Image 1 (tube, rainbow, N blue to C red):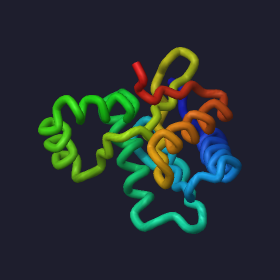
Image 2: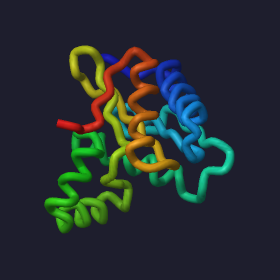
Image 3: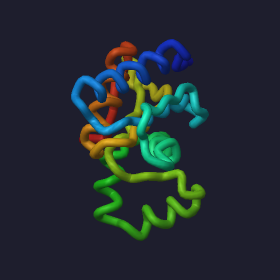
Length: 145
């Protein structure tokens, strides 16, 4: 069974943070979870606001829990807010249904983890996650389709 390595997780974090700096995004917090939802790597740039770890983790955890990127979760939340609210409560608040939670897939589409980023607008958070995953030689699934 394929596994997300620490080196891949660190590449995801460093690439996402570099993209954020290069594009002058607000300070980012990046969380990489393995397929079990356990944190594999985390970093936050200087100046991130309070609770960014929890928000980034909620984006990644939600993607893993549903098996879809958080962009798709945002669409579900808009269509069925009571269900998403109930699930968020059931999982202790660790579900943030907005873009920025991206599944990490292998070439054969197996899910090996998820990235959650918080700090800038959700589209930029997602773009940084996608760039990090690509740099690690893996496939990003933000939940677009």
